[in-house]
Length: 451
Image 1 (spheres, rainbow, N blue to C red):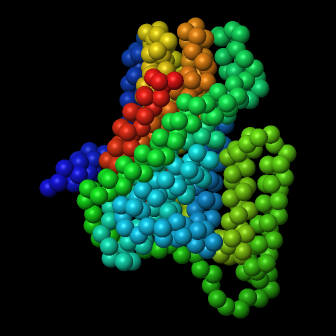
Image 2: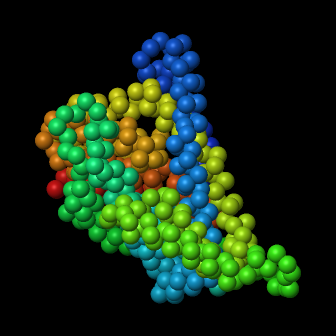
Image 3: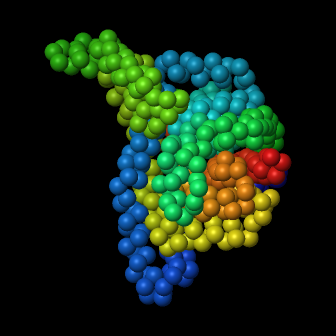
């Protein structure tokens, strides 16, 4: 048996489902809270249940959960529309062997993720599935797990892209003061994108990732085990027949198109009234996806048939998001994240601090796979230490962003949309996402050390 086959089989044996991982991390978080938080064991046990439930049903976070579910479902509906299918087919027509296709999927998914992480999640999943459908029809052996990992690779660059949570928040006037309060004095009113997303360090890291990750997936595909798999194409066909009365509304191609275009006009109005790219919020993305979905499907009936297929992929998010919100409540209110950040900060120098921030952010992301939530907790300590050591705020923020996005390749939570669309199990993609993570670690450590 080849090394690649043994490597893949090891993860199939050791890695449970993402839902089981969320439960195990919850149990570990309870244990850490009980024995490491301030207070006696009995006090910690009692307060842990309260803090866990407060996180579990956190109102703003539940709103965020619905936004993420809508991004997944509406993006999947859009991907089932004929024009999008033709565009993806054109991309896949550029290369027709599994190795070149894996590289191609990685390249386009990385570009999409730099623009917007939500769109990249759905795009990468759909293009990976369509590639698998092609090889399945041709009865050509391929590695579906590797194609899925290629479609998930965009989560390696998202926090350094135009939709990165921390860079977007710190660019808002007054955000730094509201986040840190009196904890950090003399903070600037805002940190512009030129110091974070558009900084030479981040542009260099993003460019290197764009060039090297597709090559890595190409060479991995050459050595990875392949097999024949049956992957059936998803279809959203409109039933033929004569329609009477009010049901004509559902099947009218002009009505659905008109409603979709009207929604798009509203979205464009919002974009034109906003400054720079600040309009790229989850709400705007969902409004745009709704308008595009209706426009491309053209009839309400076709749109709803696609919805029936797409809604299944959101089941994992509905169940697992609240569990991670509960973990966030335990880690935050128990002071565990602040303690970890403070420990690294107190043992840092001006050279080592960005690297320690990168490392601690990667650890925290395993427990709290939310860039925005992580920034809200880790940000104040990070800003204070950066100020004391004379490190540019932008570099410190991007160090946290790199650590956060890196361990997405280890923590399969954000792979739920891809798993739902492709039908893959997490254990099939993780061996290859870990390879992406290892290469990414070298790149991020190098740019943090050099700049």
